Amino acid sequence: MAISTLARRKATTFLSSRFLYSTSKYSFSLTRGFASGSDENDVVVIGGGPGGYVAAIKAAQLGLKTTCIEKRGTLGGTCLNVGCIPSKALLHSSHMFHEAQHSFANHGVKFSSVEVDLPAMMGQKDKAVSNLTRGIEGLFKKNKVNYVKGYGKFLSPSEISVDTVEGGNSVVKGKNIIIATGSDVKGLPGITIDEKKIVSSTGALALTEIPQRLVVIGAGYIGLEMGSVWGRLGSEVTVVEFAADIVPTMDGEVRKQFQRALEKQKMKFMLNTKVVSVDATGDGVKLTLEPSGGGDQTILEADVVLVSAGRVPFTSGLGLDTIGVETDKAGRILVNERFATNVPGVHAIGDVIPGPMLAHKAEEDGVACVEFIAGKEGHVDYDMVPGVVYTHPEVAYVGKTEEQVKSLGVDYRVGKFPFLANSRAKAIDDAEGIVKVIAEKESDKILGVHIMSPNAGELIHEAVLALQYGASSEDIARTCHAHPTMSEALKEAAMATYDKPIHM
Figure (tube, rainbow, N blue to C red):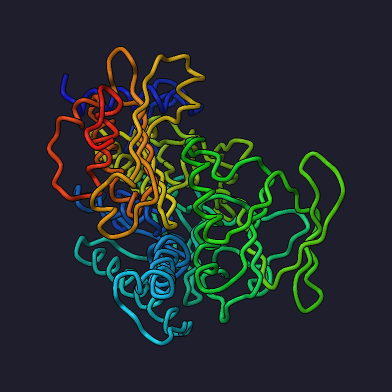
């Protein structure tokens, strides 16, 4: 069986088990019941983020007349404008400063002093964002995607009313509508985000001065990344988390090592802790805390509080109720394995549907959705979507954690290899981390790979490809890896899984 066919079948089984609607129950013709007219599009995408703009470009590449509607006035969505891209810019810049302070001397690079020029750092971030947003507009022109700047809402399953950023209104018609409006910051009861003293991730990317004390509410990806940025620049960072662990989707063993790494960087953690109230009426901010299970209250003071408790689907003002699109209790739009909603001709992708809220997942959704619309086959296997925390060290993972494998009752083997034994990591004096490979005991098929290291987000994709093709740990172990490279640690961990490593 060809791998593409196998992958499609696996994806169909996976998605069908998670979403409400089956293709057989809600089958429909792509040409039935739509508005007519010479200005009608084959595809209209609402939202110009990673899922939306990729879907629009792919649709145009497949020969479909396509319009993309984006309310922000710049393409790229949250990810490019106030999320993934600006945060990675600041993570890199702050890491350079931290290295200059703490590591350069070990490499024979010495200077009398080093200081932060925060406006220049923010300027570099803004330049990167601007260049990339203009680049997407260029791709739209190249692929002949019509771009409408404004807020779209449904008039009917085939008509979108758009309040344009210039103040006008127009109606865009389409045979197929794709909802790709992404997600928004999840608020917390009783806490008002003013983007000054109490900020979301958006405000944390635009602070005009380095806070002496930063409290982060939520120990997920975003909170730890932004906490790292400001901690490197000089803030005292305290992370308050209601749950018992940071990043709950992470493998438990790797998580413990990761938390220790962050603590060595002077990041403090208050786990199993509930935020009762936040008072920002004075010069600073006072947080009233108590144990998650109840108990005595304490006061924690900060100059800035970052609310990073997750994200929620953004569907406000779309008029979903007007056309009867069904959602679940979390506000996510329900789709079938072809990304179709219960309303014929209306599709949804990305953060507004079930699945990981990740930009790269949204992109894959967009491509697959458009391929289905064009009469082709598409697939997205959510078990193969990698996750990355872009701190230093980074943590990246794909597949199942050891806890998940145990819960399934599968006999398995684990192979581990520390970067302390990796020659490249030792050569550059950056050897904190580990690779962990989990494989089924009988078949040696890889079930999960977890990496904590510098550039783990780049190293993980060998593992993603291995899982996608059903590889064994021996397959990786017998694949020649260039020396000296960080990737040799994955090879050694694979060797440790089915046999024994060489360098341990």
